[in-house]
Image (cartoon, rainbow, N blue to C red; front, top):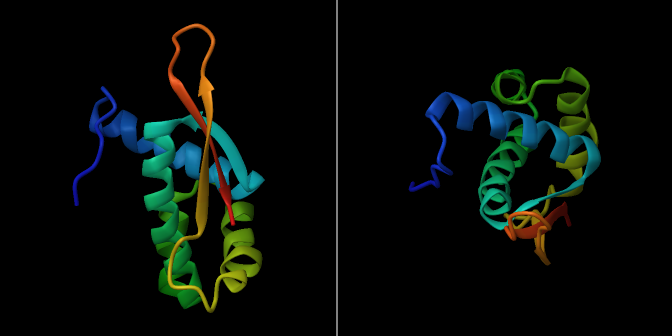
Length: 112
């Protein structure tokens, strides 16, 4: 699968997405750039699909990505059961216009 490098080293990119995904599942919606939002949508779909399995191995795999045990617990106990009958499409992305300062296209990504 192709991915966006976002002008960062692989370790920096991995750390950034771990942080963004943790915040995304904690708050249910975040504001970020369009390209980051598209990557977060793909990565969050993988984590939700894992959480729907609801076994110990899936929990350990998700915990390896998310940085907070409380957020992992929320993903398994609240978020994943909500999407039990759904085969994908867990997120929605809204474009909100350019950011002041560098005019980067911003978006709000939220759980459906």
